[in-house]
Length: 153
Image 1 (tube, rainbow, N blue to C red):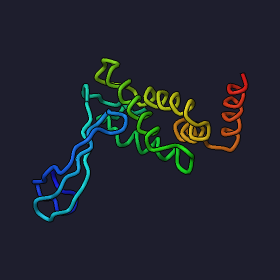
Image 2: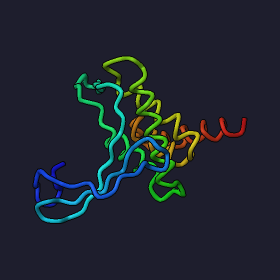
Image 3: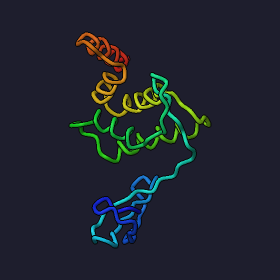
């Protein structure tokens, strides 16, 4: 494993343990070159999946991009890191178990929105505002009223 500090190619594993939700192995490593310590995570990847963007551009599925989007939507909300990880792992599992080698980014966005709807309505509306490209305050109002109406029924 390459050291993120000095780019040395060799590091020694000092400690390994499963994450709280047992979906990954957390490893503490020490660089043989500079002695710095860092953490890596080892996760199961069922298959390689390519994401097809709305402009038809294709790129490999990247869990960290998904995690970053969900984290941004949940910013300053009372949502634990563990809950965010569970949501991201659930979406990743759905994507990998579909059995397809390609998936539209729109489908992934819908999966995330389903998860956020159950987790936190504010995070759900934040994510939707970017995902559905809200351009005016009216877009927020209309979407928030559908969320409010769905919550009261």
